[in-house]
Image 1 (tube, helix red, strand yellow):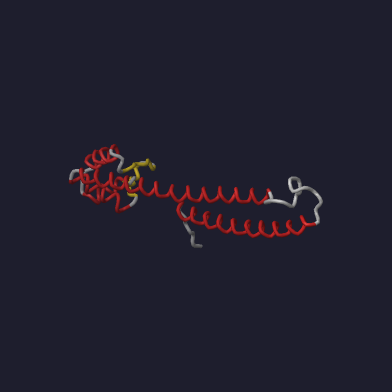
Image 2: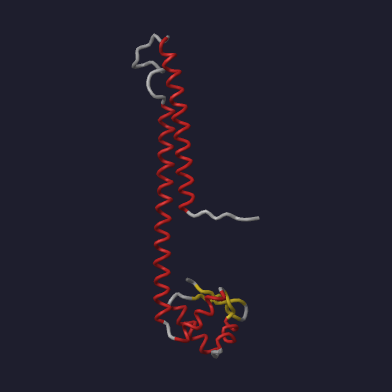
Length: 163
């Protein structure tokens, strides 16, 4: 089964479209009720100030208020996604800057971890040709800079790239 992932922007646009459709429905019902009220008011003997058939129905005002709130919520979701994208770009730029500042061995180890996604620390010794001590020390530096994360699994560690 295929899973569809919607971001905040897409959900915001859907909410805005739903609010617009809801506004059209409320407007249509309001017009129909007002036209019926005009006919009913012709036979009403009450003064205009207290006649229930004069003016816009209160339910229509509630409907328009709900529509406005939905519209604002949709806009909030759309703009929130832009902030998330900007934060993600900023994180990516910081990561690229950190990687450029790494030494040759540190870059080699980081690229190995990043390309693998997740790798056992013992495999890094084999893949890079570094000693166990060298791999541990480089991983300590990379972990301190926030580039990798080690998770204990039994007698070994699984290393993953954080960014």
